[in-house]
Image (cartoon, rainbow, N blue to C red):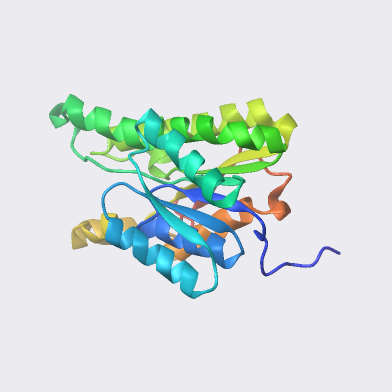
Length: 254
């Protein structure tokens, strides 16, 4: 029987977009704990990103912080170049960067629609396209897209966010079919309500209503999502591709 390695990502290099806080931060640290060298991407908060890097280094790992708006072609390309320049290769891409601009459709501006689709969906496309070049040459790769249960079930006031996350699931399945023969897997995780800055702003009444839908009776932690991403990025998930794994405490069962 194959033994369970405590360092499943030794020798691997990972990019995590939007890794300065929340789920992205937890994923970056979990991959580093597993032995990966990590490129910590951020758009604005350089101090928070550097804190993630220092945390990884303090634990004996290797990491760098790279600024970039992933919705821009040049930034996505630069991320991959930074990984290869610093660590010599790229094995794992976690498309986590995302924003929310909530409003009912009748009140939603085109600017807010376009901003969310640009970061949450276009950014994943650009980063995936750039990352596939070295992965295809190596005939090995792991791409994990951070979607959302909102992309499966919808949510009032989040048409832009739901559309982007649903699109991310479609992107996951299409790319999985394109590159599976080259040893590259592409999967998605769909977090439910996770304790992050985004959910911290929810009114108490709404939190209670949401809690009624969660079988396990609690909001998730970023580490809950990070553990699943780490598994999908490992050799142990080599026969899993094109899948969407809900990490939602039983909120969506379909």
